[in-house]
Image (cartoon, rainbow, N blue to C red; front, side, top):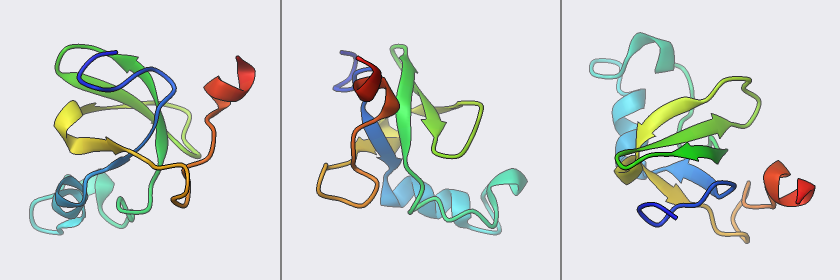
Length: 88
């Protein structure tokens, strides 16, 4: 466990970070038009500063700062078990 996250955790972006990505003036062009508040993913790798997240429906992971993600509660939409948990 690094910075409170473990591989296999279901995560989402914090509201603050998602708002920045969705901002047409400040967000990167590839992230515009995506509802980052609703996107969920699984932690696939960790290091001291970043979390590697495989978003649902994507084949590649994104590297995001650990302060930009939070765990999804199981009772929240998209908070079910991850494929990593099911396989083990």
